[in-house]
Every structure is written in structure tokens, then in C-alpha cells.
Length: 138
Image 1 (cartoon, rainbow, N blue to C red):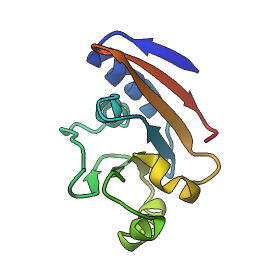
Image 2 (image 1 turned 180 degrees about the horizontal axis):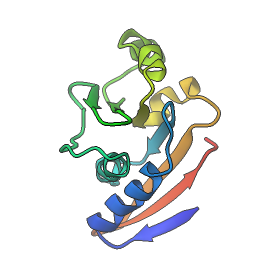
Image 3 (image 1 turned 90 degrees about the vertical axis):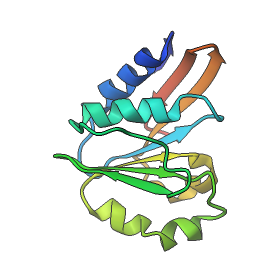
Image 4 (image 1 turned 90 degrees about the horizontal axis):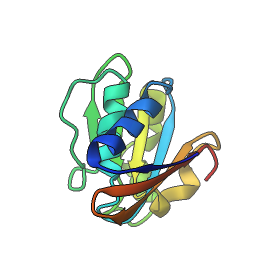
């Protein structure tokens, strides 16, 4: 499925719609350059999961946890050099905790995701417009 959003609110809303469909244990992989809208999309995911917290990029902390009925574990792989580093921070443990894992910069560790992960590709079309492609195949 491909959607074009015209502003940040629409990008957030697309994340919210997806978030409402996710079950515990889901993995969402995000692909896109800096400024493509990955964190805005994740804010929407959190809202869709019923999480009422401010969502920010975990660039320096690697992972942020947002607790709710279904927790959201928000990873940022920008500073990760290998999948070994991801496992060092407890990737397997997060997968088993019954939350939703959303991963920014997924291309850096793409071989660790389950086959049913939802892949979301975001592209900046200029200004606040974004192309968002979603599927469950990487």
C-alpha cells in the first residue's frame, strides 16, 4: 500500500492507523533518509496503540520504551554498526516482552527481523509531503 501525505499530521495519522492494527509481538521496520518522517510516523503508531506519551527519536539512547496496554519499544539503529550490537542491547528480550518493536534505520540490521515484520518506507517528496509504502515483506 502506498500513501502520499501532505503534512506532518497526515504522516502521524498513517502511523496511528497502522498502530491500531498491531498485536503484541509485532515488528515494524522503518526505512528512509534523515527527515523522511520516521519519528512522526512512530508518534502515530504510539497513539494507535493507546500510548499517551511524547515520542522522540532514541538516536542517542538506542531504544525508548513507551508503556501502555501494548508497550512500544522504539529503536534507532543509526549509531549501530552491526547486528551484534543490537543483540548486545537485548533485542531478543524486547521481542519476548509482548510489545511492538519499531525500528528506525532498519537497513543496518535487516537480517534480524522476523518474516512477518511490517516494512514501512518513507520518502521526503519536498516540504512536508511524504510517500509512505507499507507491506509485510522486506
